[in-house]
Length: 381
Image (cartoon, rainbow, N blue to C red; front, side, top):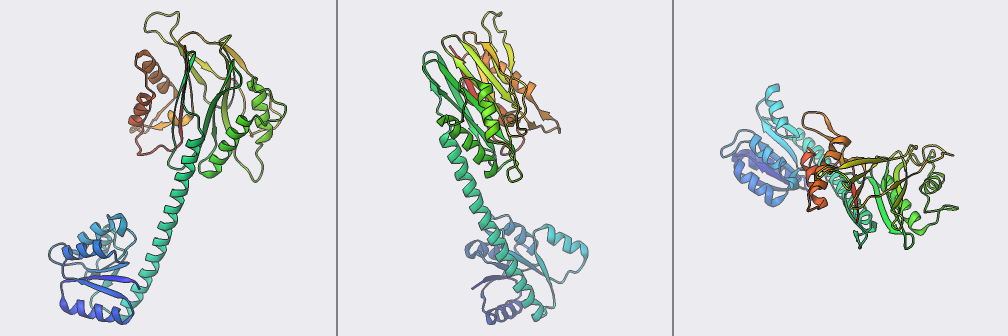
């Protein structure tokens, strides 16, 4: 049975509306002023409110604004009862959140029709809100699963790896991993699937499971260009699958201190080192090779490069969500600005990745990030 709240200071109107709607099978409650009506609305959570415009102790516009601001009452259908008929008055009512108007003197058949219509819209709004909550819960669970399969920070005498991952409001396609292939070779990579939602998250999970199990056919996992070739053959775009992804993949040999790497459309890894330079001076190297994103074109050859890692150097892998941020002035914070933040961060003795994340959050003008934010820090001792 639908619950209706009548808010009116006229006892005759109260009696007329309550009797009519009760005979229609509705559960009806009555309040005699705006403040009482707001209190009862919070207690009863009605499906529909019929409220007089002009009342003591809070008028109908104020009651409507307060009710619509309460999340639990946001789908309540609100009808303003008024003798005002000007366009300006109706605009004021609509701006306050009113869903419909009923003019005095009240015509009973019109009242019943507007109530039926309002209750239908309330039910549709409630159903949509419930489905939205279910979807948000499922996306949150998916984000938790993605987080659960990501690796824990690594620390030993020769290398230390720390990570941060913040899922976006829409769930994106970021994923990263690092693990020892054998006693000497450490794999590290970060990928970013195009788009958002489950369709972006599922391919990233598939890639990480495929690489961990080493199930790519005829692939040498110590050779980054070979790995990218194997991924490109496996994850080709089709008419039913329009997803591609960028990736940076590297293999570090702790015995020779050689890092072999290859990338496919991904932002460069940033290597920062100070060994052999003046005090306070930081050298920046952009570790990137040319290559199309994985899945975009078949039969693509990927290049790889090698870099000798100096002592006490730091390597940073990240997705573009960490630096593609809108600024209040309408511009965009970019890669160059992010690298400057990394340099300042590395010049400080006591490092903690949360300092970078906090700085990025300060720059971001929105409550949440539009894209996944991933950051991997590799410190070579």
